[in-house]
Image (cartoon, rainbow, N blue to C red; front, side, top):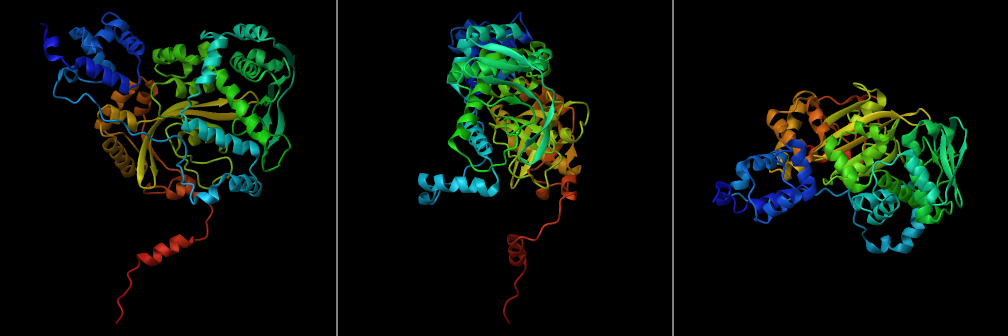
Length: 523
């Protein structure tokens, strides 16, 4: 009997437990091993036999498996160790929920009457509100829309990558005709601002796609537009109830033209939902889940290799939040001075600003804000951030790119992960790591080097998650960020607070001041 067989009665169960905890299939674990050492990497069937106890790995193979999960090989052989790892924290997607109580005030009839008035009084358009509903639904469901994935797989047959010629053939197969037009960028009105906009393409029912000839020299954007119009034909029969594709609009859509009408109607929600479906379908068609997940694993989630496939950074980032086995992602597409064209918060990260009301004191230390104002070191970068939100501290790593849309407007794409669940799943107390980074940043006036033990824990997490830009971020200083600079925890307020206009004192502040004073005893 080999030493591994004598000492490894629970080895298979431990391997299965840690593999599932990290969301890897047997095929993906085999691929990860091949990336590190093809000579000793186990096949899918051999891994299955190890997990079922029918085979024991060689010492070289065990060392390889330990490297993938950043464990000591002895952990797999320690029969006294608990192989059911502690469940990671599960942050809910999106904004915090509020109780709808008293129930009679939140009845369907009352909400149907109150919501239109609320939108009219706040100047919120129906399309904006519809996008907020869709965003919340998307975050609550963690980007899981299997019907749309299956529909895209059926059309593209999971081929990856697809070329422009492939998309044009799919258009013809579904009876679609492409007609080209010439239009330059122009100034368009979008709510309370003018933006430089450019009409990219639109659908004319029942079968014509009108596309800007400028897309012919931009294959990545052309592929996305064609994929979205194919989606409209497949999902909705090409009835034309779909927004045009144009640059510069906020909250996922095209500029609204001259319409300043607040309130909403049923068509607002229908159009917004259809636009979302077509966009999601397009991403799934261009980056099918299984082959794209393999691609990301090979490239360690770097965004730049996507250009070889003629995919936009936005498609790469948005799809990685869906296909990754790790569920705690966020994504921002931000235009200056702080308009959000797209948001996804599967990890529940608080928003530092929004579209419906511009805040006067945004924290300037968010990577996306720093890159909007001026690229700190080139047009891309990674950052470790401790977010202080009330009495809790959260730990994130993001990777951001400063790009230009088709009309030449600069905007920032940023994708990131919540690191706390990964630390906990890897057997490290996330609170200790976060507190140590926070203390170092406070000591260094808001920006500091990551302590050695925290760095080692995060390097291990980066290797388990297979995300290269986490290690890139560890070469930089970490920063404290907050939802508002008026609540900045730094010893010296960040720059966002200096430009903030003074405000009247609030009643709660006065009450706290009164209650905080020592009240003398009566004589």
